[in-house]
Amino acid sequence: MSRLSLFNSPLLLGFEQFEQAVDRVAKTADGYPPYDVEQVDQNKIRITLALAGFAANELQVQLEDNQLVIRGKKQDSRKAVYLHRGIATRQFHRSFVLAEGIEVVAASLSNGLLHIDLERPRIEPQIKKIKIDTQTGEQSAPLIDGAAQGDS
Image 1 (cartoon, rainbow, N blue to C red):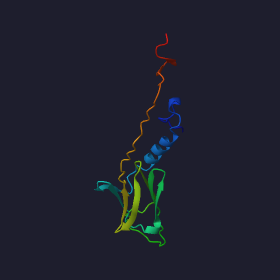
Image 2 (cartoon, rainbow, N blue to C red; image 1 turned 120 degrees about the vertical axis):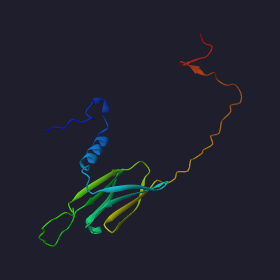
Image 3 (cartoon, one colour; image 1 turned 45 degrees about the vertical axis):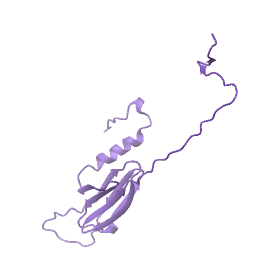
Image 4 (cartoon, one colour; image 1 turned 180 degrees about the vertical axis):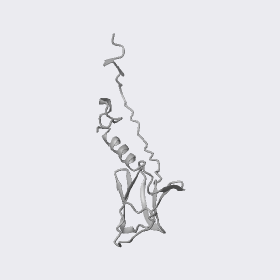
């Protein structure tokens, strides 16, 4: 079954990366694991994912281009017989598209919550003074349509 794409138009050549990003976001939109995005400071953000039952060695946090990708795969070594299984420990893949300049500072796992701290470094404005050259002597007339002014 073929899929229609917003980017199939011949007028949108070179937008393949955007199409791939949209596909990745659509695939991970199932709601698991639940997460919060918190503004900690003016330039700091914290993403918290609820990952009860996962150990640090069962999780992977990666930065792929401008996407933060979190993957988890539970390694259940014991063979238990469940009468009811309500704690979700299924494999997951969650990604977040990061704005330009956002940096991942740290990741920590505590009490079933994975915290990922992000920061946008404060960029100091760069001011560069440009010297204006002056010409001494005769100056050439500015060109209009390739001819000097005054030519008729």
